[in-house]
Length: 469
Image 1: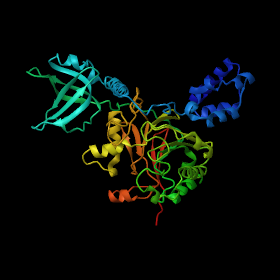
Image 2: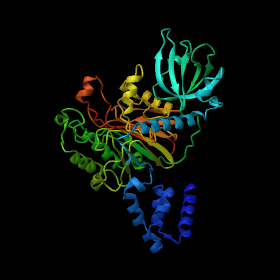
Image 3: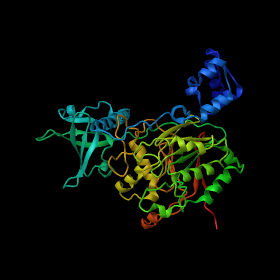
């Protein structure tokens, strides 16, 4: 029914512009969710001929997806890398304003005051600030310094308060409900409650229809001697096998580190089967060419790929597209894809390293808990200045403004999947065996797993392609 109405709307648009649409072209527009970009299809060629063919739609789909990709809109290619102090100020101001706006949606935070006014308002109040310092007093109480765009204030969380044990990260934006001291000295807020941006409780609509799967894999590391090529080929064989599940897979996300690169770490050349990065990408393209043509493949860069290391990362260079099949799309890092009207947030996941160090008891085997912490803070890299290189600019692209239905990360070579407040998430499996560094860190990856999310029911399926002996 919805698809029928969408067809009518698109036909009305073209008819109002005097354009006749071929039935195959109309079906292709619907199939690829190109409704939001139909105006861009009115090229001079189409207007002159008065006819839109399926061939022209195909050309749009395989054209540069930086400007006309029907699945995402963001483009980081022109973002400056050499940034000034003013860029840093704008960056943190943008983060603060976006996350404050989300926090103020909470009923707990009605009547919030700016910090400058809060200092002059004894008694109960509410403020929103960015954490700039955290410490513990000699008596064991938590002490924070928070700031807004104009002022700052100390916050004390008494050790008997249950929230005193919560993880509070520098640079995260939080709401504070508490009381301002009226004694001598500088005003201090004694906190009763912390309010985070978080994912709100919500009702998610489910479609009662046949599954449509988006698959997720990460950290393939083509070119490495430890790339598990036999497992990867087994997965491609399964995709072509004609099972009910494989036929229902319509999208496949490769969330970064698709090749091993070179010069990423000292003496990496000793670990490489293919030394030339361009040849690594050619080998990747050959593998991807074995994926069925009706499966759309999204390829994201990571810290091993041939783009800048600092995030956000642009799409892989257009020069690499020549070897890729027509069903492959290059996407930036991070990126929100719109697939079957679902929002799929994809992030390679370098900031997970920072969280593993910051969260007591956290390790790579429990990485799902770190993924939840990102969602709770509505930010993909809440700690600035750690192991995650970030480009300061007028826009903080790591704020999770839209609530995703599916959240995909990778990078740490673990595998964890779960649900956080109706958001299905996965830290996607690697396709590389244990490296010497991982052996030294006593970490054993869980490789060769394809994770499937049904975009209708949001059910999750795990397919393991490790050999069984």
